[in-house]
Image (cartoon, rainbow, N blue to C red; front, side, top):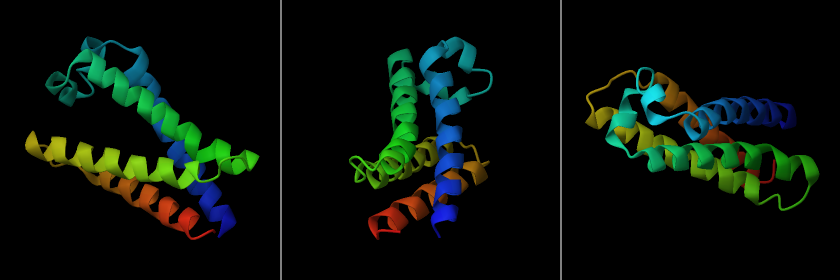
Length: 120
């Protein structure tokens, strides 16, 4: 189980680190062709979402790897579950139906949160 948790943690962290850094460091206008939903949010909101995703990615790995403040790992995973609930809501509101990646990310984060909360 430990290996599976580390694999899920690593994949989630990589995905959110890349996506979050993109949102945090690129302009809203440059994101718009690939992420049409950014037109619904201010540039500051998009950057804040990106920064939160980067912090959550770090929170999935660093606490467990160092053994310091390990309660942050399930907290970060729960935060990412909430991010995906929000993302799915935004996509549905916009009439977008390609939600498979969002659902996979939500389920992976939920799996990680529950597993870490249970002490695995």
